[in-house]
Length: 112
Image (cartoon, rainbow, N blue to C red; front, top):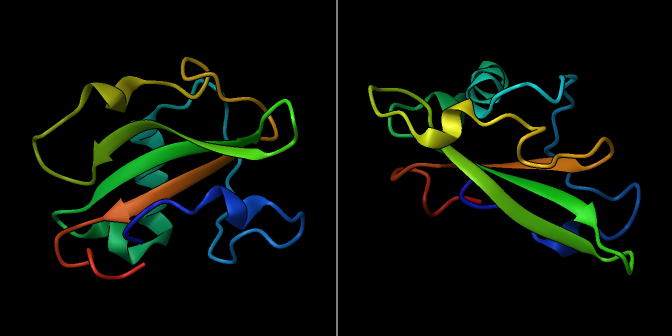
């Protein structure tokens, strides 16, 4: 909540962030579909002004983790972004990558 995890948060196998949610999906899932899944399990994502930012976390060629933002969505409202229809596959998600989702809103801006 409030921002993405840092690459250091993923550096030690087995010590990944504890606020994880495991989901099983396909590479043709859109960011809008993933937004709706997150809203089912994270109350903060259901806030009217919530915005979700998606990032892939994966090891580079040297084995160091990289956090790469790939898209943003709004939780509710008539405001849709071009990112809503992007699929994990189109964004180059690879099996084994982590998907880091930051939930942001004006009321949550001071909470992480």
